[in-house]
Length: 300
Image (cartoon, rainbow, N blue to C red; front, top):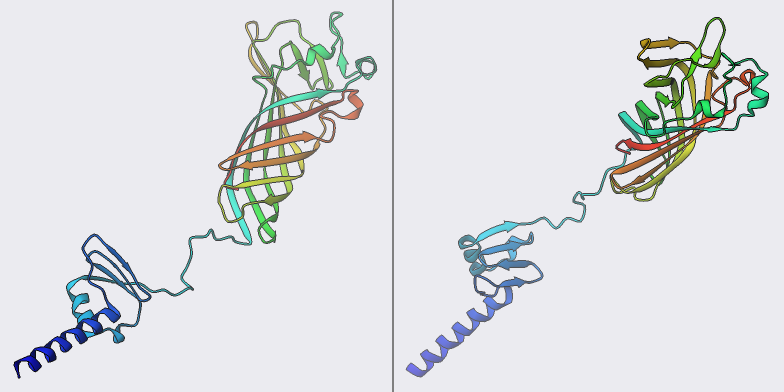
């Protein structure tokens, strides 16, 4: 009789162990268990939704351990960048270097009357020599917008801003507006001699964003800009006259059309601009093309 009781007890114990092994496994604190519906890491048990099918033994284990429930819904939000069809960037700053491509025929230009000879000292190509290190281009874009065209890879970029060119001359060339617009070589040297030209400009570019899911990826843009001359002056500093500013249009071209480009390499953005028309009116005889390259501080 005692033998039958012992056998029955062993069978009950085996059945209990078998039932427990169907749904859970006892592991040590530093082990990891992965099953179809449960992940157990030490004292932490991660259980997929389906709590009603757990055995009493598993429920007791869950109460004893620290339980974390995770929703395995495949529609949960991701960390990908959200791309709007229209994105606006306010207050963009450009800092760059400016220079001139001088194609003037000075023999012909001398006869036009804009280049004035004073004391037998005619204006020549050397008179327009620039200090390249100090000739700058600073642009302030009030805003730029990017409009999605094709899957945020092809976009249109446009905006409005102020382009400012500071051309620093090495020689004593001077710009005057009275009694008529003229350029001459002055009789005194200057410690600072700058021609400032400012345009209100609208840029329009086609943008190609090769990494639309990233904020700072690889992109490039190309297009044109149109600017209207709103301010120009010749600022000079000398020991003899001190600081002087001469304002006027100096026979500068009122409109500026330029080819523009932009390259984005991660957080760094480079820009370039090359005028498609002359800096001066055709009547002056001068043929000078301003251009600039630099760094752009922009989100896109």
